[in-house]
Image (cartoon, rainbow, N blue to C red; front, top):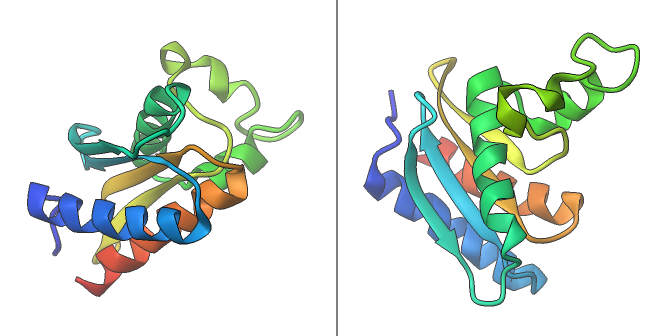
Length: 136
């Protein structure tokens, strides 16, 4: 089982930053462990200040619900099973894409949260980090 150590988090952040540079969008990148503890955070030059909290809360959402935040968005729409969840946990639950759990041997062992661009850009950068994790 791959644990989310600081060394692993540094690799994920480097991969995410490279993808963010490729698409020319400065990002905030967060890596948390299975207990929603911050392992590493990185703010690229010129990334939006608001994205600091958003990236961290995306990672928190993904690890605490064991769901990517795209799925949380779908399930939090009116009439769906998680409608209103964005109002819980002191507002830390994010209901749009960019937070993805990190899984090892079928268990959620952490999460990545990315913010700074459009939802699609955030998901692209977070996905690059997840792919890196899966290759370790």
